[in-house]
Image (tube, rainbow, N blue to C red):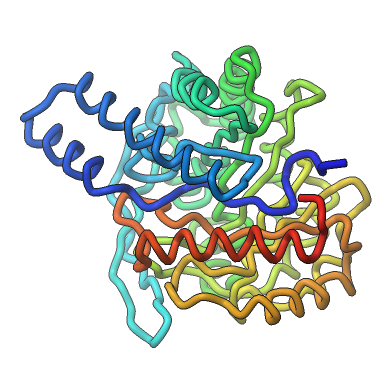
Length: 371
């Protein structure tokens, strides 16, 4: 019997944008086409990426995040009370020692958080109408409105008590999830950089400078996410993807999952975890020992940051090593992250993207048989 989502062969969700879509976005920004024309270009590109996923054999299908510029801001800015502020310069690292200067935007809380409108419903409905597979919706984790700015990014007049902020944030997410559920969504992924950043010594120190205790944050973030998803239908699969940064093949954080693993696996009430495990910056598999029965870890063993294809034998060997800490039947395989968490995309070609996805599918079939 086929395993329910997350699937033995799965993926995080974002894909390289085709040139026609990038051209349409540029034309819209320049005022040369209207929003309806941009939407039509997005629709056509999404039909193409759906076909790509189906042809490769994936059971879970996304829209490639083709309607977004950034994986998080496009969603979060549609909540009432959220504005965008300038980011703090961060050194993002690339294989080979190159560094990129990047200032990820900080979300500012300028008023009461409210879910004023459906955010992803129309996009979900288009996706579901164009595939016979399981449509998966990816949205940023609610924690993305807290970690980067902390108390200083939350207006004290709107929220003198942070507990009220946490409650309103979770309520806004519950309303969005209820909207998606009503439309038929049964596979939802929360993209979260913050649990992974809390595994990095530099990021933990940065959190202290913002007045937060990095030892307390995992439990707080589990509480916020649990409150956000508490009313989901019983048959809705919810997963969380942990990311150490994914901007033009670079990353911002390093470190194994040990500092957050016990809370992550046992207090966060999700069904599955998409975990980066493509190189040494993600640490070893020992934290998987905390995985309880009934949950799945999707091992991100195939990197999206480099075009070179992995050796299938090496990927299988690493799955065997992971299975020393968690049962093989509770494991699955995916690329380590999306191929294009921002519109810029990673430094891989469309052919390399397809090769990586084919590798995931082939290895999963060899290891588990029925994917």
